[in-house]
Amino acid sequence: MGPLTAVVVTCNAGGVGWPNELMFFEGEGEYYAHTDLLEGVDWESAGLNAPGRDGVTAITLQGDEPEVHTSALTIGDPECCPSGSAVLRLRVEGGGVRVTSVQGDQGD
Image (tube, rainbow, N blue to C red; front, top):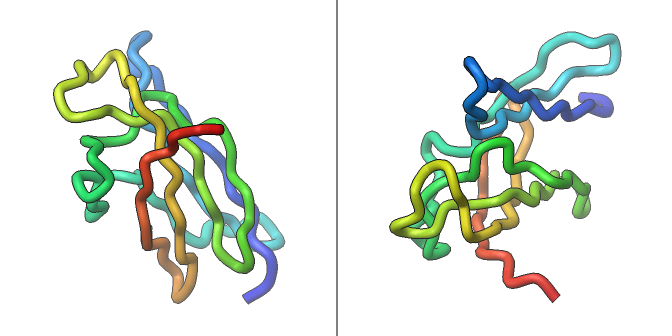
């Protein structure tokens, strides 16, 4: 597999933002894989509930794994108003994407 391009996908479905999805494309623009950053992700282990709406702020590459910075809902937050943030580490391979870790981001 060669280099991939990551794209943050947003949807506001009538003015209300939804959590971002990430899509990955191969060199010639062919779809490779995607993740909604929610399904199958253990947010509770980081003391969080879910990704925030329109929350992705950065994607960096740490070694060969993408690292995603996003706003996050803490336990008890209303869906409109995330009060936390998180860093997720991803594994992109075999035609799929898997979140390998979620950590609450305490900032500097």
